[in-house]
Length: 251
Ligand SMILES: C[S@@+](CC[C@H](N)C(=O)[O-])C[C@H]1O[C@@H](n2cnc3c(N)ncnc32)[C@H](O)[C@@H]1O
Image (cartoon, rainbow, N blue to C red; front, side, top):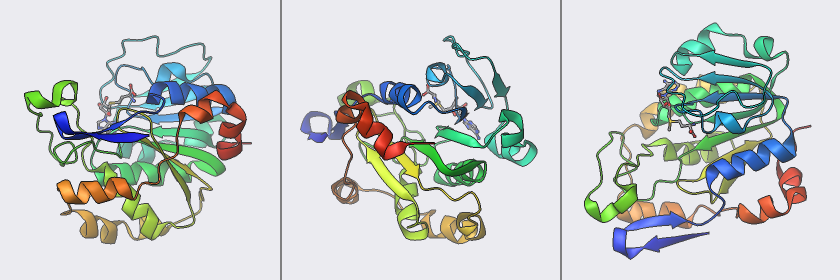
């Protein structure tokens, strides 16, 4: 599921790569509505086959981001503006079945995206958070700092501090069911048993931000962060779709 690579002083995940896992979710769960925050080239949007919304302040679409879908709504704006101005279930004709949150890599942004996505869904929605497993302390910083040569292809990777969502959700939302998947490069956090009516994160937003603004992961803290993850192996779920649907069924 994961190992620590001494040569580059980084953790490494060995499950199904995240785009393959996203594709398996679309194929086997058959969501009817999809919301994506952070689209960039369209690689993750391309694997969605249902009515979709994509939000990004700067699209740089390079793949066939519209796939085989009939309806795709593109919102070229920051997600805060999107959630403040748009009626998401109204656009899609139903609440969001499946959301993938991969926008700004700072924890308060992801927290707001989660609040917006959960409110637009239903109790059987699936919300995926990307990049919550930093592989080394540099990647986990709030500012992007490129890695040295010893980091090889990871040198340009930046997860930012969205890893803070895990301790935040454990403390403030024990009602959610959370699986942390071992999908390279930097993990997927799958959230189910959502509650669109919950006000906890919105009402305690400033308290949460104050509590976590200053925290960082040094090497020792990163080690215990990884030891506490209780990772769910993704490859067996892709190989046996019945297990995937049993864990994440949307309907
Ligand atoms: C890592 S990329 C997304 C990659 C894409 N999901 C994929 O898997 O191929 C992150 C994207 O988030 C976008 N982003 C940055 N700030 C944002 C914000 N406030 N709201 C929505 N998207 C944002 C960036 O423009 C960038 O395109």
